View (cartoon, rainbow, N blue to C red):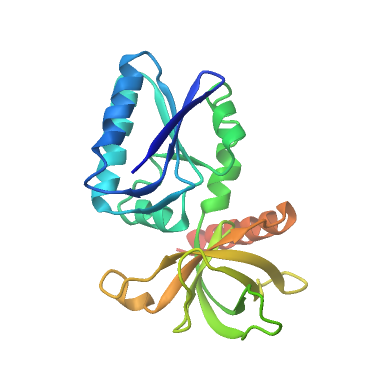
Length: 237
């Protein structure tokens, strides 16, 4: 697990490659060295991280506690959808601050709360059933079009229940209808998670797809729809 250290505006950024698992003690040691050197503003960049397993979550949690015990802050950027889902599964998604842009993450150390509301809205997830059409982006003139079902939706991505899955990091063209939108939503996505039959028996087979280059207008429309429906469901209880 190679780790590269760089600094931006007195914030230490660790670019992590490969897996974060039980063999990733180097990350704990690196974070420990930083805080002992007085560098307590830390960002972990997971853009090139392949997977994080449950042991890897323990590694991240130890690093987080080490920073906070030194009155610092540790934040995450470019977190794969599969890792976000894992954080949610163990109720850690509200512990780690997660950003999609490095500049916003760096700025947040100096202007707390700058993007927390929009970030929370982006990853808020709604259980829903929608039809989706998708195809792999490739050099083929007419790639095959598949049908699936969206089981949950956020402004960051969707979970597609389907027997026709693609390998992680595959790029897809997506088209689905969000209730209330005048026309179908078309965008691109990247496969970030493949369902595990033992962990997700009720959602297997399927894949998590994170949106790529979703326009601010479409992102806002999805976030507004989710917020409205989550609020409506809560009010009806």
